Image (cartoon, rainbow, N blue to C red; front, top):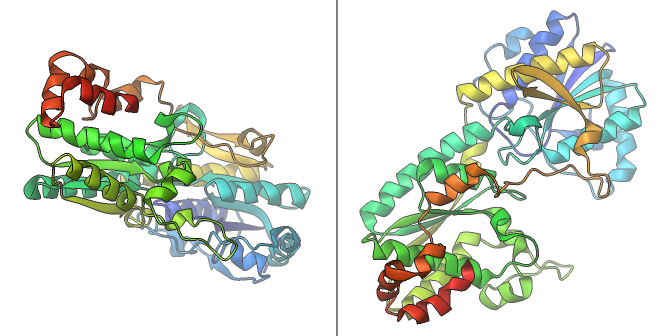
Length: 411
């Protein structure tokens, strides 16, 4: 291959808009006299020393911007001996002839981009474009990561259908949404669809989280709905809640398998299914038979065709990435902010202590979260005084004070 190539690589899980970045970068780079190659299969092939590349032309990419998925595929595999094999990765990039590298991905890919940029000592200029449906990269002005808006849009359509099913059948649904570190997607889908309640890890503060407490919050929501004459509902749960549970307590309610090292396999636990069992048992002990269905939503969203918001957004990011590199820039993430395309140095995105990418979590002290909370049906402070408490306690077949003692702690 010729030298001074613009290389494009995708890391992490799929997200709507990837192909739009590939398209915009390719077109702008070629229009500026550069040749472009896509690196197939993400960083995995580079770690293996494979020059697995796809030369790209304007004809190849001119109509891919509205398609989901990634024509370059992607991977999130990092070898156990990544430190040692990183030299292979760097040598492979240089052998291909990459002078300018555009990385497309989330926090893990940003970490790799920063690593490559540092180790290349100026030989490879690197710019990153922020992709994740989790929306957990801290962009200026609270702007969303690309892919999030489409994922939320598609997710809302799914949840709206499930709400109608719940209404028709008199069921409850516990829907788990992706979001390892933050509850943006769960909250966004829940609020926009009008789900009964959304639970995110941020609302529980720091420290260990009680599994029973989360189950009781859902029980309280169901009891409150019943007191309002409605026997159905939908709860949206952020998967990040799972990592906050007190494992010793969780192990009392859920059989957690161990791997060959004797470590608990938390990722194998189905959050909605685990909560369904305890919530169902608790309601049954109170004389209620509630049909609860658990469902995960995530993979259905990641490779969807991008909505116009993300199509427009990623074209700006791709254009800005090439412009930044060709002007001599490196070591930054490209962002859109206040109508302009700007860059944020990698150093501003990396935690000084841990070396990991900083995480943007839902700020529960904002008015936007307050609005989302106000439209949920769940037990709040006002439900433990006066007529409200009497009505819900009667529904629960308890005396008001008994109900207060049993459930007020969840606040």
